Image (cartoon, rainbow, N blue to C red; front, top):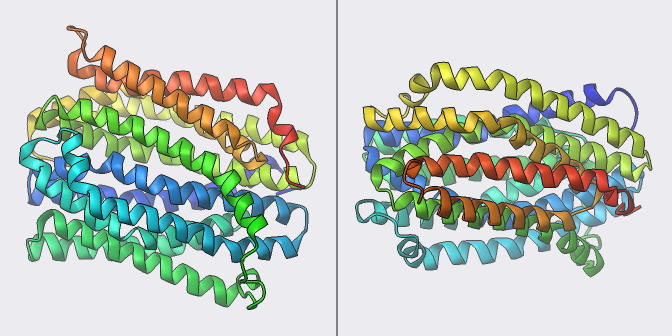
Length: 440
């Protein structure tokens, strides 16, 4: 990525990421559709009530994986093969620590957490079970995310896609078997997801060892190098904390949603699933920008990093302009895919019309943040996470208490949070602090 057209590099790198992310979201979409249609709205609400918590638990391992990817991309851009291999070897110790913390917390404390979040009585049992099963299987999604972060840092965004496609197909088949045929309900959806993640993680590892020389490590290389472990934690923990802070703010918002009853929980679950799909192009652009900036920072090509930001922002604007009329014209039809309950569908449709006006600010969180992370400016991740917490918590508590806004303050909160957070990201980019953060 250090030579040639920035736009071409970003698109060619982001498109496989986009397809991969869409297939990853397909897990959640299929879960929601099958549960909503074959089990019921309460079961759908139970799965949705765990969404923010799963994101919180996922944040620690994914943040550390991104930290590892930043190190690999910069040393790869600098042509330092030895340090690339050293970081890959030591990623084992970094990611294993995350798995122990996350899985133990999810399995042991799920009942307490769900009660603390005021989960409605009619869905708390299923929600607790879903969280325990998916949290217990976190080792496999951590394995996949760790390897895919390294592959992306090396410029390969296609290989992770292939294994996600495979696991998505498996997930769909198992959902139908466990829920529709065997009637395992929410537990069946959770088990299907864990099995699919296991396939993607193990298959990706086997392929990487066989096909990519960097993964064929010697016994000596596998010995812990605490300098690299510490560096991965130094870069990864701020990203993990950023994601965790964002997740915590989403948990607070989920608690507010729960207080409005099962109808609001179901509608919020649907709009979350839809907007997770909407976010995928932005997320893919952000990841492409991260690798692009990491390799070019390693090669000391600052102007190309600036060019990458400009191209990414333009792509985000074009996509946002396309999505606004789609949500207005087809929001009802999209929501009806998930449930048959007309009240839930109507609430979801109106909610999408509120948030769709803020899709471009949402994109302008991902693109500048990707550049800053790739450059090694992960300290900003803390600022970014704190911004989202303050905004999401404050807006959710204030807007939903205003009489003429009420329940719609849930979705107005998301739009306002995206806008203010995007402003902070852009300010950080123009400050130029990131130009002094390169490892090489």
